[in-house]
Length: 338
Image: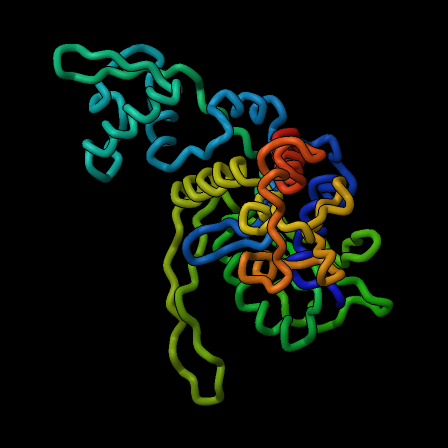
């Protein structure tokens, strides 16, 4: 296809934000979409968070910034009445000194109340942290999915299904005049759904709900599958508590970033940079005459032409220059989704 995978990914994100779920049922869901997030061993292309609207709104009192795992530990366990922090918080498994630093940070952000009783720090919950995510859906974006690419992708999708960190796993591929290649059905696990992306997005294969509330299997190594390969696969179990914590951490990063944060790694202050359609904000380069990736849109680009200083200060014709205007536009759209 003409557009790079990065642009395909942005199109899928925008579609998911407006049209999820693909079956058309429950379109009144509150949906939050993010890209390039995950855990240390796995980064997902697109993540769709189906949210409880009331709880999502309640999450807003904690601010736009993410809440890290140590901060979540304090906020979710702080009592409704004052208590000595070592008595009221579960053992975190790391230094209490670090917990005390987190308490001070939470107090500075206005998230909890603190007081001193002699030399003891007592804490009290100010807000109840809501369980704002109902389901997490992972989408792997592969626009040009040949048989060989499907074989390479199959191993990763099998690992995703076995781990069960997401409630559903999908593969999005470019729609063609032909039916979806049989390689997808042959190679991918039956639990993975398939989306054919064109002018519209059609479901070629429905995803199966995974058991996120049961222990998962983390595949560490597996045999190559050769004729004489008798080695055993290595794996370990992922507990329900571990999966619950990781899902919450990923959701917090998604709440902060969304999918429009790609502009933070690009150069919208270049005179050639343009967002042609604010409703579908794809980064376009007038010099190259096409959509570009974040790897291309950087200071080292030969076509980079910085905005004049007068544009970036005040005046012409949007205060702060067009680049600042693009950033404000995407920030407003991200805020509306939250």
